Amino acid sequence: MFQHLPHQRRLDDSSKEIAKKMLSMKANKKLVQNHLMKDTGKVVLLKDLHNIAATLKHPQRNNLTELISQMKNSPGNEE
Image (cartoon, rainbow, N blue to C red; front, top):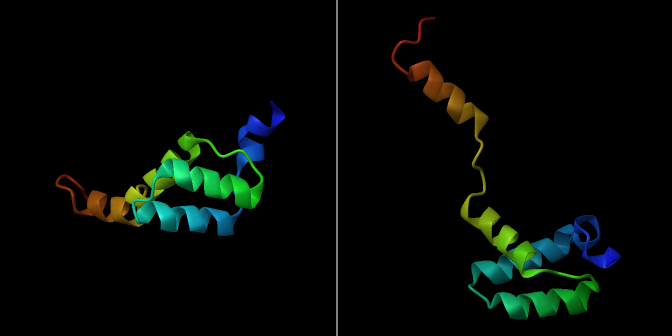
């Protein structure tokens, strides 16, 4: 039970990069899951792989500098 907690499932950077590379090549998530579980010895859920794949689609959703420049250029902005 303890192994299924999020902080116990967290992958290190090298394992996460391997997962990103595999998922970017459209690999089967179940096979990626089995590979990571054998390599790291940790429990990896399909939900975890889904979250990693989601970061590939939207790497920088919160770009503060872009938001500030859009706000400065918006109509009604008085400086």
